[in-house]
Image (tube, rainbow, N blue to C red; front, side, top):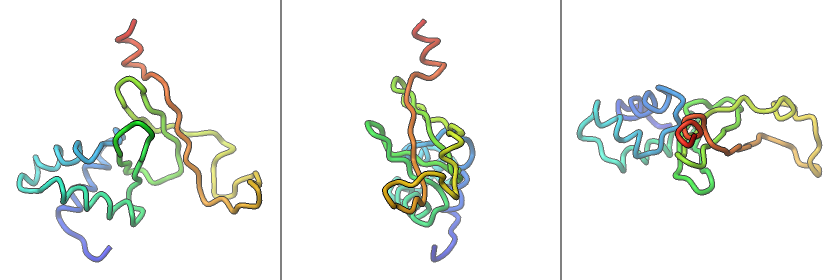
Length: 128
């Protein structure tokens, strides 16, 4: 990244603040409390730059809005089909890098993304 900016640092802090995997709109809503004059476009641009440089992860989940994750370590996600909540999931031991134990048609495996989906405890409780 070319230079550090106060806006980018605050956006990064808000993405990393907790593990809720916020959307750009949610990051914007949080950042506006600290930087009232920031635009949604500025938040989008900075999120994309942070993701492009591997500082955060961009999650493009099927049937859901794009979300961002401050944890760049290898891990899986689990998504609630009712409320859209996304949580980290430690994953399966055989999917852990850096040396993947299986040969996939001669490919050199550089990483993996695996998403689980279901109904979160809060939505299950509300349905009962």
